[in-house]
Image 1 (tube, rainbow, N blue to C red):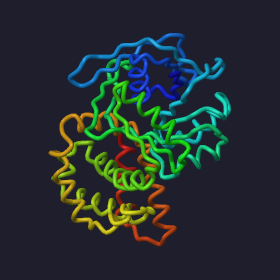
Image 2: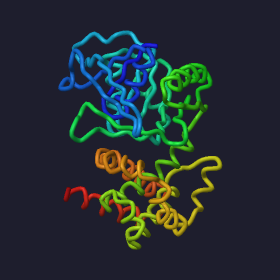
Image 3: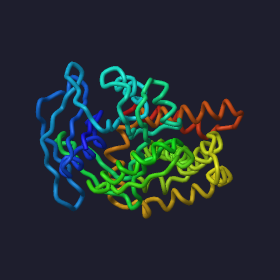
Image 4: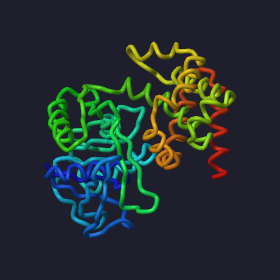
Length: 312
């Protein structure tokens, strides 16, 4: 297959390297400052051998090659600009898989920007971060669960989703397909945004979050409020009844559950997604206000998060 990857950060670089090594044609579409005729990338699995490739970095002003898929690998606050750019510079008929966190149905969001091709949501399940001393080198490790491709409720997209999932699986990224992952994604983001904010306030030292009762309880209450503020559906709606004390117990156990590699990922990755964390907290608080759902802990946590970030 032919892939055009929008974004050459950690996620895009890993997927591009895996697909390139598996024999697929890969090009990166990047900002003008990052353009280069040929550029070497090194992607190294923790405890494994590195993947070392040379690939083309193209961008505005270049003729974009044909592709079977455009993989949009950006943060959530960058997504609207990226989708608009796909339509404007790559063409509205491209097939797109979006690796970005969103509360919205991504098919609806992409159609709003004028995309007419197949649109899939790509929920990744691996940890990857850029080497601080060598920007062209990335480290990664897989989580136990597979990544996910969601057809976003469009049955006609299931077949291309399965074809793409098979390619990603063969390239080294285990992937499952589902008709819609919106309910799961909304719950996951509702929980993870306050968790990441509380973790960030503790310097991304998970043991500190686990042992500091005030911060742990505040984070747990914020998680409970976030799940109630957002519109969870189906069986996931039952999680709105989980009490804050249960989340506090989970936070106490997280250092043992997440493992050394998981802690290493977030030490590098967490500070990079502060804008995304801020964005999702704001959405959760806006939903709480719209629904008349009290969210004092969520607001207090957001304020502490902003104060912490301003001191960095």
